[in-house]
Amino acid sequence: MIPFLSLKDVTALHGAEINEAVSRVVNGGWYLQGKENEKFEANYANFIGTKYCIGCANGLDALIWIFRAYIEMGVMQLGDEVIVPANTYIATILAITENGLKPVLVEPKLNTLEIDDDLIEAAITPKTKAIAIVHLYGRNAYTDKIGALCKKYNLKLVEDNAQAHGCKHTDGRVTGSIGDAAGHSFYPGKNLGALGDGGAVTTNDPELAAAIRALANYGSQKKYVFKYTGRNSRLDEIQAAVLDVKLKYLVEDNAHRKEVAHYYYEHINNPLITMPDLLPDEQNAYHLFPILVDDGKRDALHDYLDQNGVGTVCHYPIAPHKQECYAKEGWNVPQLSLPITEKIADEELSLPIGPSITIEEVGTVTDLINSFK
Image 1 (cartoon, helix red, strand yellow):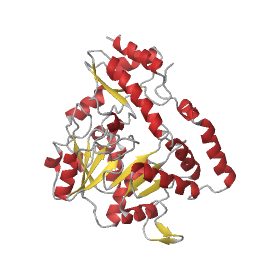
Image 2: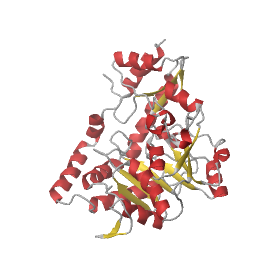
Image 3: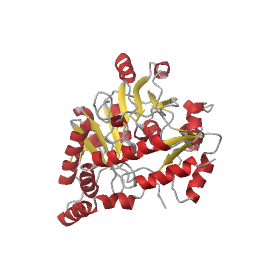
Image 4: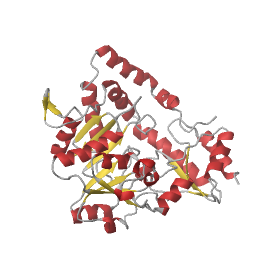
């Protein structure tokens, strides 16, 4: 059996150090907002290339707090618009709607699967206050054209970096440091994954950082003094300690993902399969390896691989604008028609990739794909 991703095997790669870190916290007796958080936040900010990192409960909360902080700071107000890729995990859009903001969905390019920067300017209105980009699948979604649009229209650039820890832009900046603020997820299956939920915000803006830290701690900047009506959304000490161990190996683990990806690119040869454009290595952290399966055969390939002991996952079979939770929203009535996003939802299949899969196993997956008709 070749699993899509074995979290047990991934954890075992650095198991001794992870066990030591967990034991240190357990035996230390301090479980929230302590030295482990301080250490990880400092190290992760340094890795990303920002002045501030604020740990929080999960990646969705990280994005929620960014928009909420901008509202508290008067930068945005209820009803303002945020441009967002239509092809994304729903969390990106949930963070916008959670704050009473209006998502404006923009189609991706089929060859990159990322937001089409040629379509963004037409979607900008006087109510637009931000562009949210998503480095989906681990691929760098930022372009200099997006940066120029933010400057031209005075828009905030928010990065959803949940899937792209360690990815870079062409100028060497690490994703998560390119925009005004970025949300990160440390869900266990991510390139930098905790042993449970976890997230963080990175930014260079001291006012934003202070507001987010308070909002995620009940709205309190000082004990029992509440500036905001916040929530409890904190990264616990055990997760911070585990993440700090795994951060040391992130570049190494990503390098193995790239080796796996190159094997797929070089050896998959099936007319039913389309792969997104190959990016320079530094511009893809290869959180996922997505392929598009033609002729309505995505589910058949998934089942065929499953029957042959290979795990795959469809990301994401129902596009956000087609989800029931958004069926009656004003911005989605009548329901948006987004054919490229819908095509990706119908055809995308993610192949096994990760730090623990062997090249021999990748060869087996590739041979099975090439023999599929």
